[in-house]
Image (cartoon, rainbow, N blue to C red):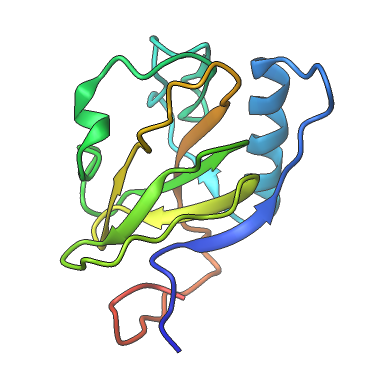
Length: 154
């Protein structure tokens, strides 16, 4: 059985009428409960809501940056971990040198290793009712990395 290029750390269904700020705080709490902490000073000022102290953002608007629409790795460094979530049309993910594309289910909270994967905004990322969360995180000290045959930490 082939492993996914990401780790599902939970699911999240926001309350009806939840604001981007409420969604961001809820997801930050879930990520922390999963054993990860946000990297400071890595928020995005162009987001609908962002928090530099936890390295997180929620977008509820179209993606202006065309570089998100091609396969890429974020420029935060090789050791960076990133958590992503979307209520619909989740981020596409693949192994860095792989061809197979993996797409999480809507509402899944997934952890991506920047060094071993690439990701891509879906073509439908501009839909008005799509919400997207991203947070740069660090591994909990108590959780040693174990790597599978694909080179992905489990």
